[in-house]
Image 1: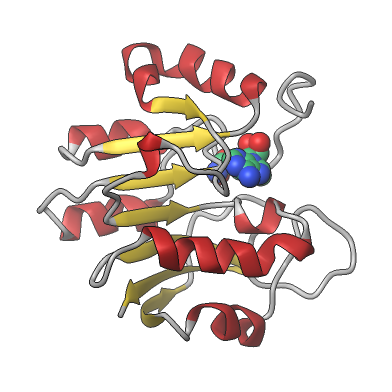
Image 2: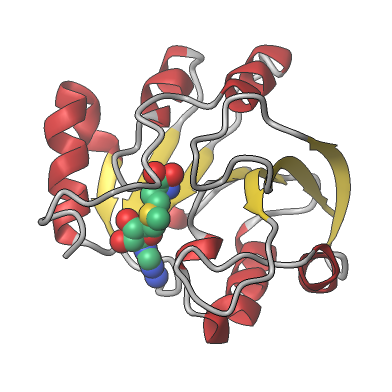
Length: 183
Ligand SMILES: C[S@@+](CC[C@H](N)C(=O)[O-])C[C@H]1O[C@@H](n2cnc3c(N)ncnc32)[C@H](O)[C@@H]1O
């Protein structure tokens, strides 16, 4: 509905610098899934670097918007639910998270962590941006460090954690770039 109304305040309209830097530092391509992809600006970066990419969103309006923006690269965008089985989510090595976890109802958080651990094989990575805040209302729903650690630490090790320099106003000062490696 927000896509139909063109109300997408989370949309950075560009590739975040920490992600561009990560891809530059990792020249060996890895297959990547972008769940809750929205406009999926990151597809261009991944494909130009040779990374096989599948971007999914369960909103038909989001998928249409992304495909319209991406032109020929729109073929990498699929309408699918992150929590349901789909062939596009097979053989993933990396999952890129941005503004997906914080868009989910709190009741789905445990399922999100379980699904990440299922999809990402040993040595694979969950990379991206995490919105740390303590708010009652959302979306976006901020999370505390302790809660996120409690969700991911049973299956992942945190190997990068830094402050982005180009956050959009909704997330400024409250998001971190993190990389979690699957054990
Ligand atoms: C806040 S938007 C973020 C979009 C994009 N990642 C970005 O950074 O601009 C969250 C997106 O997650 C999608 N979404 C929510 N639940 C989903 C699910 N279970 N499976 C797939 N997409 C989902 C929504 O439709 C929405 O496009």
